Image (cartoon, rainbow, N blue to C red; front, side, top):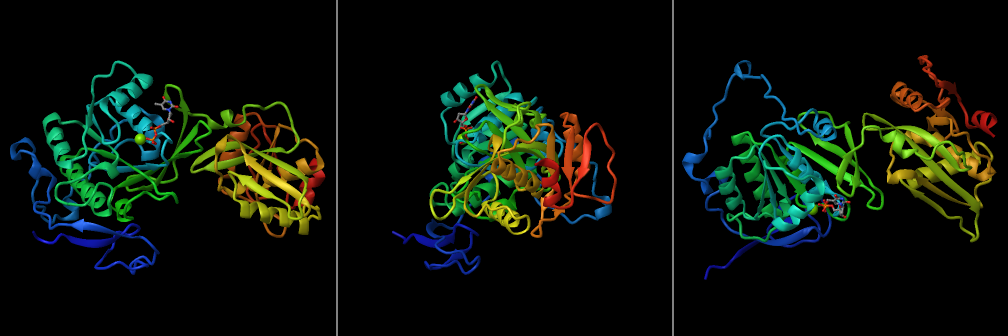
Length: 455
Ligand code: TYD
Ligand code: MG
C-alpha cells in the first residue's frame, strides 16, 4: 500500500511545512502547526460533480478592454431584513460570498435561518450541524407557512452541488464551513486544507452561476474565524455577529466588505421567536430614564456610523485590601486606569485607595473615545454620592493632561441627544458652532471646569 503523504499546516496563516516546528516561519505564530493527510487532487472543479448539461458555464476567460466591460451593476437582492441590507451596503450582491462569524450560541444559525425564511426568492439552507427536524422546530418558532425555503442536511460539497444543480436556488446558505468536506482531499472536516478547498469550490460556484452564498464560520477562543486566515481573504464580505450571551442585544458588523462600507452596523434583539431588528437602539438602552442615581452618566457614542446613547455606571467604594480593585465591563480596563490616574494627578481626586467598578449597560462593548467624559462623570458622581440629572449627556474624549477633547461626528451625536429629549449635552469646545436643536450644547475645556458645573 502506498504510504499516505502528510504535511503540516499552520492553523493561523495556512502555510505548509514539510516537518513539524514550534513556530510557523511564514506568520511567526507559535504552536499553530497541525499535521494533515494530503492527497493529490484528482479533479478539482465543483462542477465536475454536476451533469455537464444542467449548468451553463463560461469556461475560460479572455482579457477584455476595461472600457468594454459592462459596468451596469446587477441590482442587489433585497433580503427584506433592513439591518442586514444596511450592513451589506444595500442588499446581497449576486455571485458574492459572505462569511458570518461569531461565538457559539450567539445566534448565527438563527439569523441566517430567519433570513432564509423571509427571502422573497428560493433559497437552500444546507446544514451540517443540525438535523432537518431540529431546523424545522427552530423555523416554527420564527415564522410559519414558508414555502420557498429548502433545507438540506449534507456535508459533502459534491452532493451539495448536485442538489443545487437540480433545485436551482437563488441563494445558498451553508451552516457551517467547518463541517464541509470535499472528496478531493483526504483530511478531516474542519482542517485547514478542507476549509480552504471547500471555500474555493463554493467561491467558484458563486462566481460562475451568479448565486450569492453565505457561509457560517466558527471562531477560535481568541475571537478569530477558525481556519486559515486566507479564508477571510478569499471571500467578498466578512460579517461578525457579536453580543453578550447574557443580554439580548446582538450587533452585526462588517469586518470586510468588497461592495460597501465597513462602518455600518445592524442591531438585533434576541427574543423567544427569533431576532427582532432594532431601529432605535438608544431608546432601549436607556429605558430607565427619569430617575437620577448617583454613579450613572449617559454618553452619546457612535457604533460604526450610528449614534448610540448609552448608560455608564460606576461604583466607587473604599478599598478593603491594600491593592484597590478596578474592574470594567464593556470598557477597556487600561483606559479606566488611565482616566483614574488623570483624575488623581490633574484634578486632585484621591481615588488611589478606592475600588472602582465600571459597567456599560446593555452588554455592549464600547471603543469610541467619546465615552470618556461620561466615565469621568460617573466615577466622580459615585465618589461624591451626588446624582447627575438624567437630562444631561456627555460626549468627549479625555486627554492625559485632564483636557477635554473633541470627537468626530459631533453633529450626529447632538441630533440623537435632542431626538431623545436631553436638555443638555456636554462636549469639548470646537471651532465650528453647532446649531441648537432643543438640546443645549455646553462646551467644557477641562475636568475642573466640568466639576464646577456639576458638583
Ligand atoms: P444559534 O443560532 O443556534 O447560535 P449559533 O448558530 O451562533 O451557535 O442560537 C442559539 C441561541 O439562540 C440559543 O441559546 C437560543 C436562542 N434563541 C432564542 O432566544 N430565540 C429563538 O427564537 C431562537 C431560534 C433561538
Ligand atoms: Mg449554529
